[in-house]
Length: 355
Image (cartoon, rainbow, N blue to C red; front, side, top):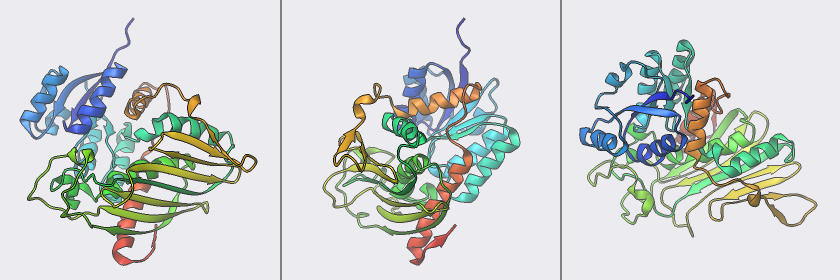
């Protein structure tokens, strides 16, 4: 007997919905996408037509009134994440939401409170936790093979790749910030998750806007809607330092544009028994131990590569059906947004911020 599919509606029909979420639903075949919504009617209709979705809306409130709906998937600009999520949770629906959780900690806390009040599942996308190297290393760490992880570094650096210049991506009121909140969520979360999700207690940071008037771009700049006469009031480079309650620390760097050799995203963990590192450049996970002066490449042990969104959305389905615990907890989202906003505050004041 074929398993009954979960009914979900997608709110926001931009690139992330088209290229990551919808592809994941097709691969998993565990959800029925019954509706889509976008404030631009043409984009909503085109999304429906391309994916065989039966109906579309331009007002998300109409989506929340649909009968038999299990969940909504929020793929809108950042500032709308918390607003739509809280309304959906209060309407009795489960919520899957793209990162970042919200643009400030107060909004993230509202999301957590609404989920708890209504007894519904809130999951914000953390797709990098589901990459092969992440899953392998998490198990390796949980087996105690790295020992105590006391220091780490992570980053996502682009030479040129400012998304949606002049649109919501580069408008702080709508995005919450630049590469720190856009790219930083991914690698800070992944590194903290590998470290065991220690509680952040203090941060310091610097931000820079050096490329607002530079039009040299790469493929990444095609994300989002460009407005040549729009706003650019966010950073294009952020660097910082995070202290945790267990004494560990994390050094970070994120850029949309920077005069570096080449694009990269990476993490590096330093433990008392071994160290580990991964880089996008060669997609290789390496382990470093005292007794072997060289590194150990563990990549051949991985299974066939799988897109992280597929694993993330599969975990959402499993959690809804009571088959697994959700990998993401809303408090982790609150801690993340506290970190990001505190780094912006530190950059503004020139002082460390105590959380």
